[in-house]
Each structure stands twice: as C-alpha cells, then as structure tokens.
Image (tube, rainbow, N blue to C red):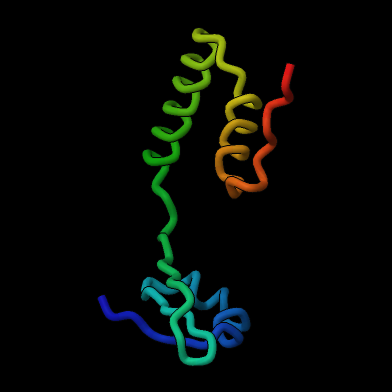
Length: 92
C-alpha cells in the first residue's frame, strides 16, 4: 500500500478526508517526517463484542486478585517519570 506525504497543516485541515480514506499518510514538518497516520476502518460488531468480553474478564480477574487499578496507574506513571524527577523515599 502506497503512503502519501503531506505537511502537518494540510493534514490538520483535511483530517476528516484522511480518516475516511484507506491510504496511510506520512505527516511532515519542514520536509521531515514526524509521524504516520494509518486509518483504521470501522471495527466490526464481532470485534467490539470480543473487546467488551475481554474487558469484563479482565475486570473480574483484577477484582478476584484484589488489584487496585488506580494504584497500578499511579505506579506506571511514576515509572515513566525521568529518573531525576522520581520522588525519593523519606528516611525513617
């Protein structure tokens, strides 16, 4: 499948057209590619149903194991911070 190159301003202006298209787009800024947009055609009802089923199964497993989702998210965000920005444990 061929990719077309467009500037970031053109991409923003014609975003609805690119979403409706099935052609991937290389987005450029000052001639340099800064990202790619790969349009996804609408998900079939079967895909959506499978995702909902998987989501319910995950919720059930997390609840059974007593996992606090907010704590996991907090830990994830802390792990993504630069090393110098992480909070150091307080000395006891």
